[in-house]
Image (cartoon, rainbow, N blue to C red; front, top):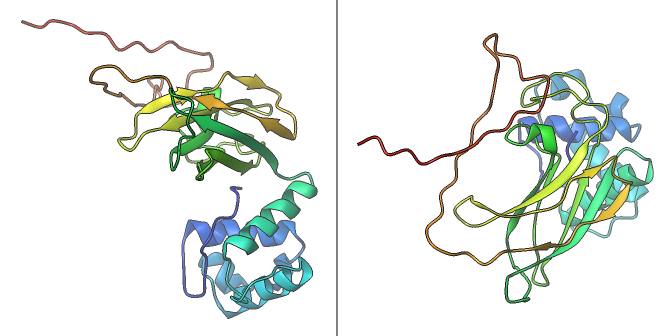
Length: 222
């Protein structure tokens, strides 16, 4: 399960709504979601009513009852954290000159699943601050995007620029605590940079059982 993000509202359909239904189930509202809405991954009338009940229960101050806005998403994620379902990463991202990095995209991964399913995503705010709620059991069973099944994650955070290039990466934290702070500094960029992404699989299509080293080399083919 991923952290809940805003905005989710009636008549939306898809993976984000299925994820919302899973969160509502973890918060003991699952029996109120009818099969047609759950199976169809649909934000129907009953989902809206359940969200409104949850807003009341969590004392969410919102002028959008029944809609998952920023305040509601934060309240849901905070409750899931309080129940021990989510863990949290907080930190600051700074540019090479020491100023805060504003608006940069970050992803949290397990070290052995980089390029596949991620743990969580965030953007830095005006102060360079970010916060990521995540489910540490994302990789415990085979499903799309899982490159290696793991019970215990090796956490790292990457920062990207507007072109999708990785411009900062944290040290790996094995067996992270429920709350961790990971600050990152963006290195000074020199010259033109390129990025290569891909997935390594064995001949039968399965992921490697051990870590592999992938190198990008320049080769003159003239």
